[in-house]
Image 1 (cartoon, rainbow, N blue to C red):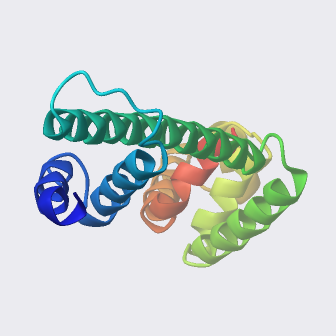
Image 2 (tube, helix red, strand yellow; image 1 turned 180 degrees about the horizontal axis):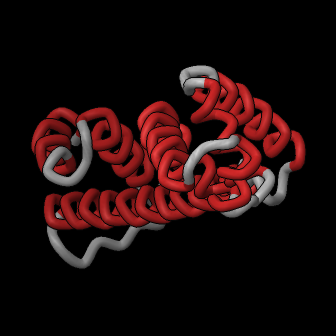
Length: 172
């Protein structure tokens, strides 16, 4: 029986599964028939019964793979969600401190590129929240010059901090 049917059953099983899985299924079907030969009632031809058995087991294997894949995908998605929550700076103080330290370092580097007057005007405007008129009085320059310094500072900082802006947006 093995030598007569095995090659044909294997080729049939390979229509559904890879060779290794098909071999396992065909061997299981043949062993099962051998073990249960005394209790087995076949109402069709032996060949039809064998092909139907291989077909059913292949379908079962495919369904099991689909279920395992679903569980694996579900577990992976759940893990990714947990991981994303862990790395949420609003939920993780340590990450927030790291991001803030890196942002401060980047900001300091960018600020070092500014001229002294641009830097002073920018700090007075954005850090101390002074109006242009007040800054002009403190720096002893015209309001228009203050505007120019702030404009130039923002232009340079945007260019230097462009890669960091995404992180800033996430933290706000």
